Length: 113
Length: 112
Image (cartoon, rainbow over all chains, first blue to last red):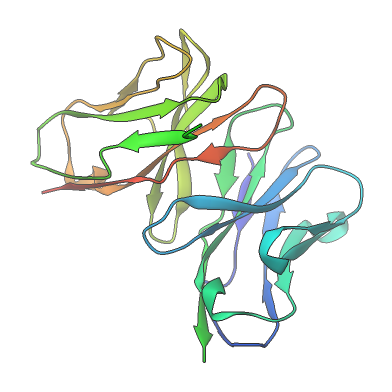
């Protein structure tokens, strides 16, 4: 069975500092990996996705993520955080041709001025 | 093009009441699904559909029914609401052959 672990429930970061959110997955085949962001009271917005190819993936809002097969990880990074990045972030893994995503528990990011 | 539309956005139910959460998409997506979001647990799949007339259970289907009579609509029915069904519900869809899922804005349900 597939699973996703986001070890950090909360992260507090100062505006302008760098941010890294951890994601570890368990999946029997080649994973399709996603990062979503959810602002308070809002739905989920896709930040980026990885299917194959270059293991460093660029997304929207200045985010990037790196797929490391040997570590079963797909960590999300941003070099310089803005106050508007305060939100909850979800990592998810899906099948190659399915409709079922398995989500991690989420990491809530707080941004200090 | 409205994307994935969910109604209602907020609802309070009494235990034992029934209701239907509506989901509609205007993108002609074959795949549609319902997730529930609970604190610390991320989103969990309730039911999904791979096309009109076809539905299947996800990770947490108990207490919920779905049907898919058209490509556009995928309603989620709570037959007898329980406090454990207090949650935020998200409908999602994706086009055939593409592994990107598009989410609605969510429906906040409280069962008292």
